[in-house]
Amino acid sequence: MTATDAPDPHPPVPVLTIDGPSGSGKGTVSRAVAERLGWHFLDSGALYRATALAARRRGVDPGDIAALVSVARALDIRFVDRPGDDPAIFVDGEEVSRALRTESTGALASTIAAIPEVRAALVARQRAFRQRPGLVADGRDMGTVIFPDATFKVFLTASPGARAERRHKQLKQKGLDATLADLLQDIEARDARDAARAVAPLRPAADAVVIDSTGLEVEAVVDRVLRLVAARAADRTAG
Picture 1 (tube, rainbow, N blue to C red):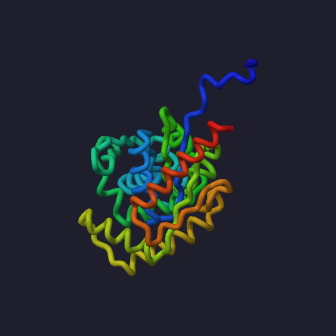
Picture 2: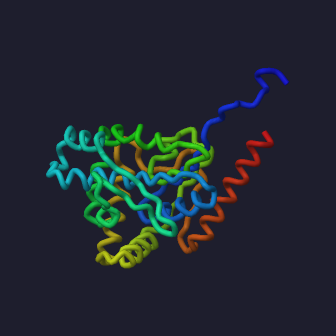
Picture 3: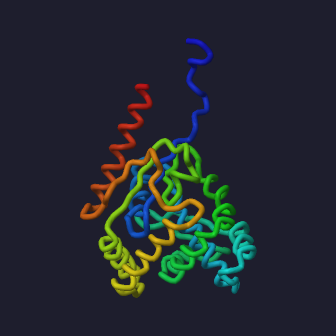
């Protein structure tokens, strides 16, 4: 074996990106896959929601780009794992897990996420989650912008109606109010905004596997993703 044939003693940390629109189930699927693999998990949407919440609480005008960038760069956010539940999220030392999931916070997060300077301010923070043994990254531009060299890429989608119903169920379980009609309208508006933004528009990476989860149970989607990871890993080992 020559020096060039020797295995890399420090191979890149494997990353699985799961991108998709709001309500596609990517968060639930990503957390389940991360648990099965024993990998770290990045909920990139929580970073944008936390930035939106922090900006609102500080009275920052949504049109003040410089102030929003300042909030994003200085964001004090911490994730604490909770067995069998979503991680607890702390901003400025206060648990805000529930506040981050409100529709008003989500709508503001979607708006500021379309600002290139805000997205740029959060890039390094997201990439810092790439640690051994591996990372499952959930978002909208994980496979196209944040981790373009990801080992495995999935784009998870579903019909707007199915996504609105899922979101409605999630909110009811958390004790939050929202009508199905309002949720559907909000999802369609977010889709249009995410697809039209100039920087990191919502779209599958060229090398992503697209999975339509409409009509599928979470476990079925999780199994498909895990099979994909296993198959790709086997191919890389064989190659």
